[in-house]
Amino acid sequence: MRMKRAFHNIALAALLCGVPLLAAAQDGNRVDTLLDRLAQPDLRNWSVIEEEIYMLWLRSGSASADYLLSQGRAALAAGDMEAAYNHLTALTDHAPEFAEGWNARATMFFEANRYGPSIADIQRVLALEPRHFGALTGLGFMLEDMGQLEDALRAFRAAQAIHPHRDEINEAVNRVERALGGQTL
Image (cartoon, rainbow, N blue to C red; front, side):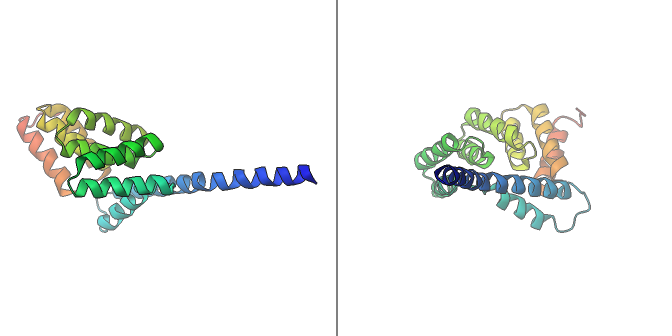
């Protein structure tokens, strides 16, 4: 009887620990489907699809990670860079597999004009979520600002291939192409 109860407890613990993993996998599959739809050039309701992607990206599967993200984003919105840094660094330490934690911290570094750490965090975002059009766009803006126009154009074009509907991405591609004299990479 004792052995049966121990097995039951182990099985229950394994099941409960697997629930966030299953939810994350389902969210990942849903994001992939939505990103495939978003890439369609004739998509009419792209803003609805984009919003759903962002909502799924914001879900970590962990209440503590979600709390750290919300606190970090609130501090960033309030202009409190020190608090934003503390919350978002705690988040990336706590949940290094959560792409949006790295993206939020990259945004914080970007807003502080600290491009080196921002680009490093974007590399982490893209390793976890290669089709993160927001991270690619931010990378493009920083590279453009640093005068690395060819690399900026590559980043903007990668974002455009994923999300061909965003005016800021399309305008960035056109602007950098003009700056390069119409050069094709």
